[in-house]
Image 1 (cartoon, rainbow, N blue to C red):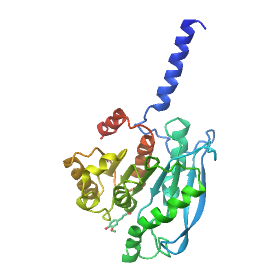
Image 2 (cartoon, protein in one colour; image 1 turned 60 degrees about the vertical axis):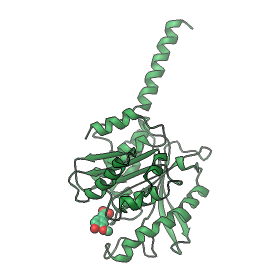
Image 3 (tube, rainbow, N blue to C red; image 1 turned 90 degrees about the vertical axis):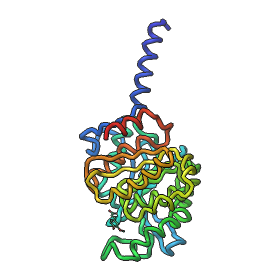
Image 4 (cartoon, protein in one colour; image 1 turned 180 degrees about the vertical axis):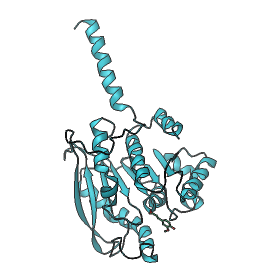
Length: 290
Ligand code: FER
C-alpha cells in the first residue's frame, strides 16, 4: 500500500479511536430521548430467592445493545431512593434510554445494570409511611440481601466477571447512602462507587472509613449533589473527610435540587467513567465544569 494511504488510514482509525474513547461532559439535549434508529438494550424483570428477607424478590436487569451470552460483563448495581422500588430508576430516570444513547456514540464500556429493590423486607413496596422506622431500617438490611442473595444470583444467571474491579455500586439519595455504606464497607466487593445526593442514612465519615487509606484501592469514588439540595451536608462532610485524608475522589456539585434531573445527569457522567482506565483529563473536565 502507498505510504500516504497508510498514513491517511492511520489518522482515520486514530480519529475513530479518539472519538470512541473521548468523554462527553456536556450533556446533549437529546441524551434522554429515545431514538428508534439505534440499537437498544433490553430490560428484564428477574426474581431471586432471598435468604435474608425470606421471600422471592424482584429486580430489573438492563443488558446492553449487542449483549451476547458468550461474552463476560462487569455489573453496575444502581439503587433507588426512599420513595421508590426496583422500578423507580426505570420509570423516572430512563437509564435504558440514556445508556442506549451513550452506547450508540461509543462512550460506554459494555456492562450489565441491575436495578434492585433496596428496601429489604417482606412488603418491600413504597406504600404507606415510607419514613416508618422498619422501612428505613430495611434499607440497611439490604446490604446482606445484596451481598449474600442478589449478587450470587446475578453471577450465576448472567455471564459476568466476578472481580471487585468488575463491580460498581451507585444510587440516588437513600440509595446514595447505601452506596457509600455498602461500597466503602465492602471494598473487596466493589471498586467503583457513585453516591448521588446521599441521604441521612449515610454513615458518618469516621464510621464509613475508619482507616481512610483503605479507599485508595478504589478505581473511582464519585460523590455528587445538587447545589440546592438540603441533603448537601451528607455529601460534603464525606468529601471533606476524604480530602483531609488525601483520598482521591470526585466531588461534583451541580446546579439543581433533589430530583431526577440531577440524577440523570449524574448517571450520564458517572457511567462513562466505569470499567475503563480512569483518565485524569476526564476527571479534570468534570471538576472544572462546576
Ligand atoms: C430524611 C430525608 C430524606 C431521610 C431520608 C431521606 C431517612 C431520603 C430521601 C430520598 O431517598 O429521596 O430525613 O431519613
